[in-house]
Image 1 (cartoon, helix red, strand yellow):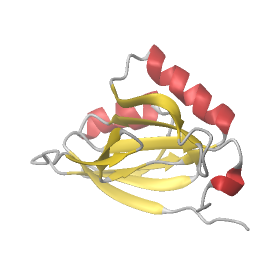
Image 2 (cartoon, rainbow, N blue to C red):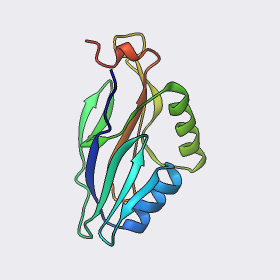
Image 3 (spheres, rainbow, N blue to C red):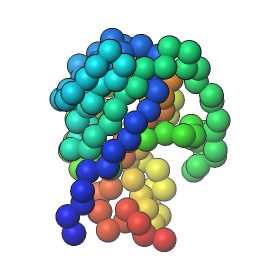
Image 4 (cartoon, rainbow, N blue to C red):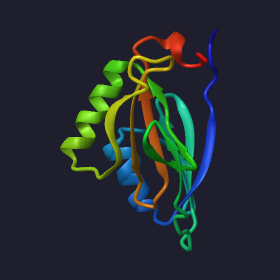
Length: 139
């Protein structure tokens, strides 16, 4: 099965901070932009940071495997080597993790490596990887 890229538009309070975070830290190639938005290539997916200077984070959390998972959040399912590389890059940049890189559901269906952190506008991101991709939608 060949997946098509998804598109996600989300608010940010500061485009320069978004450009630094998504472009420099996460390594997203920048696409088109204006004074009000920036397209980024997030592992082949199109995400668009839209300026909302009045944006305020609205923290809501749900309990998942003993952790308070922020809602809403977005991210990408990476390969394990990509996930490990990103985790190390974020640690080296002293990113404050909401949920530190770890393995969730260890020894259970759906076992996955995961980590949560926020962008400068408070948008929550989760990046995860599976040792076995057949577990992505396993029940």
